[in-house]
Image (cartoon, rainbow, N blue to C red; front, side, top):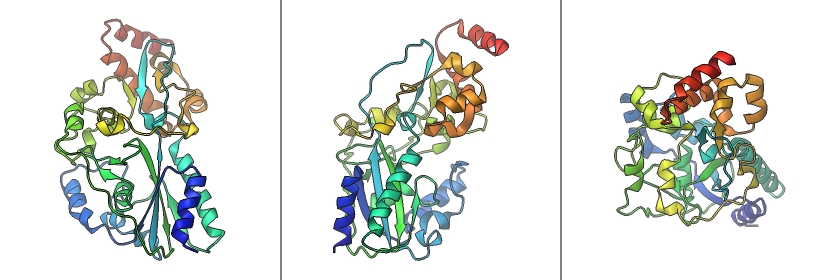
Length: 321
């Protein structure tokens, strides 16, 4: 049996949109870049600080031989709007059920199918391992790096979640790297609200709105204004990308935002309790930051809405909670 073809077949049965295979060699080409980020204080509190762990799969799994990378689109076709007036936006990455759970379940299901025909050792990761998942996806042929530093797939665009299995399987033939298709386009660089994309393929994560809406650190007043009404995450550089205009839509129903409709009620966020927040929003990926961060961002959103009465609204809600 050709194990690679078997895995490809099973991935389709499991509704996995994209899959690729790469070796377990160290990501030596990333070391200099990671060192530069550390030296220039562009590292966030959410990432592994040990550079060796970030580039060497065998420090996570010593017997690793093949890495299986999967990707699932979250670009769901959904346009329903919430019925309240003062709303803040959620990144599409936090629209439906927590993608960590969805992709981990897919990886485990895939591992079960593989184990039916071949005994093997593996570890699964979705944003939880030290390795650079985008570089693994690039090596595995899932897509190419866009100038906004996202992985772009030819069919599905860049609204894709990544996960991977470190395995001791002998695949033999790995996936081909996909050629870059950005050309001369620089729409993402021009659209970035904070100029976090200072140049093509270079991101300053510490001023990226996706980071600013998650960090517990104090945010500069100018950056707060640039965040606008975003409550969690930022899709600006992806929304302007031509590769997403006619991208294939996601058919993963778990990512449809039935509860939030892709937004947060700013008034509600002023008075909601921790228990209420967990019960209503605990299913989505962004909820891991907790109510306190969401409330802080909601206050900032109200201040950024051009309405002279919003300061009064904030004070009234906070005083009457």
